[in-house]
Length: 523
Image (cartoon, rainbow, N blue to C red; front, side, top):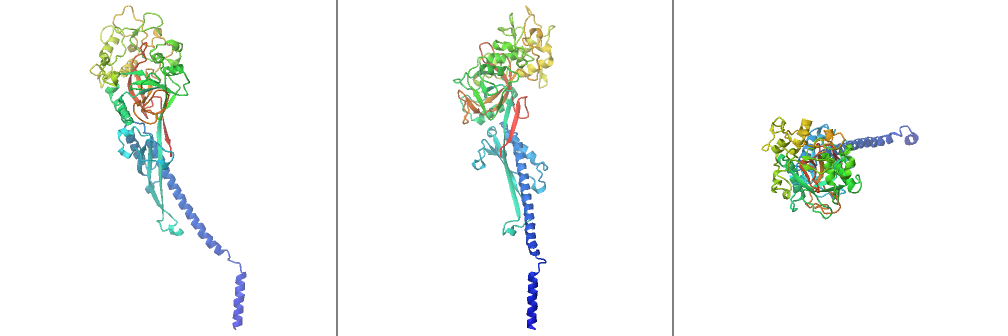
């Protein structure tokens, strides 16, 4: 009995040993667990990657939106924060949806950007805490988004972990803007609102520039800008010099032509410009082509459309004979009058910029009576200021008068004065009169030829490595702003003084046909 039982067990064991049916089942069982685990892990990994990607896209978009406002104005950081907050409220922008929607944990503003994140120092200021003086210094914005956590499908305990079964991801981005201008006059002007003794910081000088240009009465002030005088010249408020660009070519003639042209072949960036030393005697001729005056070598360019005059060239000059394009002018204030300077220049009492910036008060009534008296008596219609006719008690700026004369047509910008003139005047006051026109080029307002642009530099402030500005070549000089100027009168003989009103600053959204903002995501 026992022998038979042992034989049966032996036969069963031998049969089981040689039986191969179902042998794959253990392997399948083991591999199934591996496959399911790997799939869940891949799913969690994909969700983590997607979350990280969405957060990074959100941070990139927010940083770019904020950087687009960094135009060096005193309110630039305020606008940057507002742009970011407005973008955050749009829940569909980033595609995360629901609880994973991107939110901001920090907005930091910086003046420099190190090569790597490990070298980042404390920001200049953060969020809404930036002062106007700090805002004009800001070059970069860093946006840090709030980390987001999502639950995982695969338990952390599966790998022996004890942490929460979740994934957390965060993101940050840094962006900046370099305002670039093209078809731009290769000139810079020392900030006329900077203290000449260098007592202002860079931020204070830039803030003074923006605040003053924002005041209408200040924009009426006539500025007498003088050439710096080359490598040994003084860079003081109101002095001007020249910018260097490989697009211009070399030599004083190339620089002269670029100043005279409708579309100068040069571009410059606000983050840094290169100055060109040297005194350029031909600045006078380069500026005066705008007034239909072609002297010296520029006489051969008088019929070139790229050197055309402005539509309104009233300058208060008459000519008694010879070639009116380059003859010596004879001021004739009884019958013609240029746009007057501020009256304080007549008494040497101008209080600003060492006496070279006026107080904004000028003789509009005298200008209008001289140039706009009708033959039968009375005056031509005046422009209005704040809804009332312009007068010495209700002053416009000179640029508005100039534009008003163009808008009213030829009768306002030829020789409308009804005052007796013996002999009759020969006065090329407008290139719209073919018989009195030096240039045969058709005039237009696609580019207003009495406008010129210049980089405004804080020449006296200390900002390593380029400021304060010194003589000779200077590279990487930061630009406080790009300015739009209106030339009020021709440059007089044997002078280099340009007299102009500062109309506005070139800012994002106000392209003026020259501005091209470059917003860049750095990291």
